[in-house]
Image 1: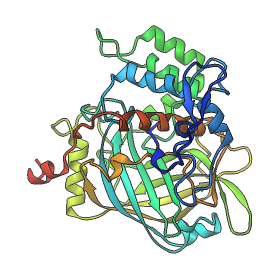
Image 2: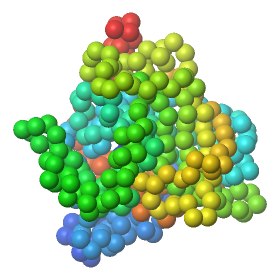
Image 3: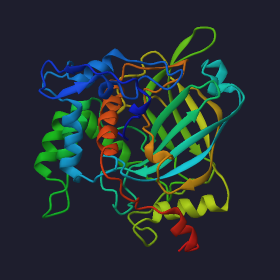
Image 4: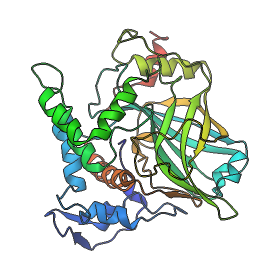
Length: 381
């Protein structure tokens, strides 16, 4: 799960709803922050509303408990996202080739250019973590459509997600946490967890068979949850999307990497300084029987793919007020024509992101580990 929401766009509501099970008061604003709001956003998902309030969680896995678990594992770092804490802001454009209009009536797929705000990140709640080849990489994108709508998506570089249900994600955070004495997870706890969630064991095996790229700029990024596209004829279809780099994919070799704690970000900054970096935007259309509620399971490789445009990143910025630092890449902020599937992670992600955003924006802000100007001044060193 990437992180957060933008409740500033929500109408203020004084009423407070208390979970029927959990003791923590939750305002409607905190429950829905990011599901509705900026002009034209179409989805207010009842399931997300109830999940956030705790009504769908007999074991009381509320949003607060979920975010508390990130802080338990990674520590509390004021002003930073609780996951994917280390990152850099970016801007660019999505250029649609028009092919997406046969799949979806969203304005973003009409031929032409749509400005984007984006964020590159690595997973984990440590804002000063050292880059590592095996660490999951993230790309969040906000499409600013000319009709006032927004589309926000958070993608990662792994071919599948590790968990199919929120409870599994929650338990995995603790089961895979390194033990101080060894720096590795407790093997007994990890084995018990994988026995309980065999789909995660299968997903981890697939991820381990898929080497990451040498950089952020030549990495694919996958929107692992399924969504539903509806076109102008009223036809609805399940989809997943991926962005594929135009730069040649180069797999890493083991744990070897360039020197420095920020080598992935430094290479990205130097690459963009030389010129725009591009990804092909591919939409995969699911067929009957393809799972839409399980992000741990890939769809068959022979499914139809449509290249709908190009994502171009032409500028990077150190995280600061007004750029991607203050954006939540909530997966349920969707334009007309795109809707959530039955994947239970979507409602959970939206609710947890909102809780994380609410916490960090109420805390003192700290400088980002990744400073674009410093890297550029160093001339690539």
